[in-house]
Length: 137
Image (tube, rainbow, N blue to C red; front, side, top):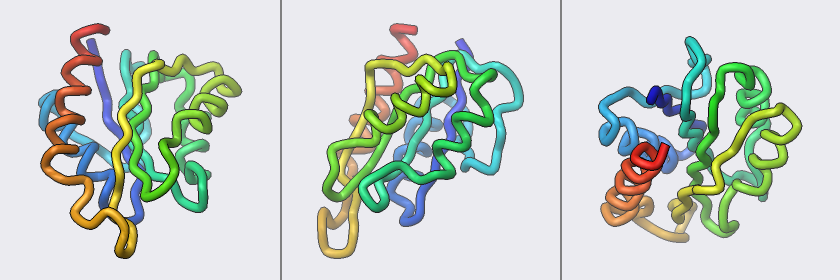
């Protein structure tokens, strides 16, 4: 089962999750400047909520790589909103990409809110999540 990890972050919160998944799976997390080199079974797409939504570059990445994504697994951080899942699911539907009903979300530090997040507990939880996803795939 081939998995790739891509992330978009402005503050570094989401990169921490992407790097933890990559460490767990023995691969490398890359930012959105790295297109998928070939068809991948699972794409862990890690993003953050900015201005109450997923960044346009994340949506564009899904559309640009749609034919190379087997199943997209949403991973997100946010200070206030619960996750990017609903927005990413909509983009996947428009692009013809299968999205897993499993997702991971945790709080991210933003100004004075949620200092220290993602923390060690979040990092361990996302590693466990990645193991579970890969074990069920």
